[in-house]
Amino acid sequence: MRVLHVLNELRASGAEVMLRSAAAEWTKYGVEAHVLAVAPTVGAFADELRQVGYGVAHELDDPLWRLPARFRHRVGTGRYDVVHLHAERGSFWLGLAALSAGAAVVRTVHSAFGFRGFLRVRRAVQRGVLRAAGVVHVCVGPGVAANERGTFGNPAEVVENWYDEMFVPPTLHQRALARAALGLADGDLVAVSVGNCAPVKRHEAVLEAMAHPECPPSLVYLHVGEEVVARTERRLSEQLGVADRVRFLGQTHPLAALQAADVFVMPSAHEGLSIAAVEGLATGLPAVLADTPGLRDLAEGNSAVTLTDVTPERFAKAIGKVAVSSAERHRDGVPRDVDAVRNRFAMQRGVAQYAEIYQRTRGSQGRGNIPLPL
Image (cartoon, rainbow, N blue to C red):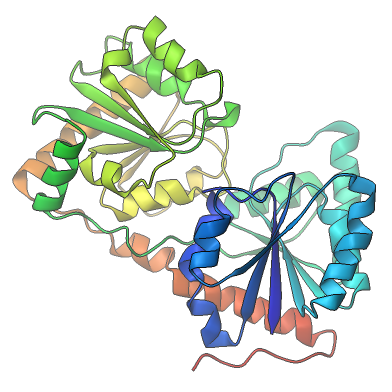
């Protein structure tokens, strides 16, 4: 069965990272997966997906009004059985185009969209039309599903995000090497965030917490992710007088930074279900997260997660308390149990759920089914 995953520009973010880790798993279900980037450029992550076996194509989104016809032609000539839409933008028109080409359509909602006014009504109507046409809506976590139901009247299934199995607690030797490579001293407490700079990520809250008297003066912040062109967060760190304790590491693989850290931090205004936070937890880190939609899902049944307001004082207190406790665990050689994270967010579980959805959705239109895993 041929499945086409449709995304925006391909970057090192949620859906793309999950697809990379699941590349080999799809074959167990007879799924031949392809990726289409609908954007001005294909994106830097395209080569990563090609290297693990995906066919990657690019479709310009300009002019936008011509896109549905071009997309319908692509789906038809490519003989795709299922089109899996991951992006909010254009999903209604691309969904209709895929249906008209004879493909089944699955739509994953990756974030808790807070549309209001006429835009909310329009998106609710669009979701209802697609649902009536047989499109299956899937959400990446319970919080996103609750938002879809409450904001758009859109009942959706839940397939929680998964993470790459390379994220495991480091040995003491691996941790020491990672800290040495980053120039960290033995007494440094280390907080890490993973994510590209964007207003919703609120990385400035970490910097403001570091400048607060409640923050331990030995706290070092590792910022993994792409900065905005204006480098506003770097400038803010200088204005707050904490630049000497902040390392902007850029868009690099996060594993080494996670191995070196004592606590994972994420002050986002909202998330879908953060893969970056799951990776941090899987690496054995405790996490201090904003008490916001999406992030709350990670606290369920997980004592390693602390939810907090992100005012400078409260965020500083929470980060400091958790970082000190975590550093003591590392010094004592006491590993954190990550079995609950591994079981809940296993890649194999998520792929199996999607394979069943593909089979069911395609079967409802009278086409071929996906075989059971070998």
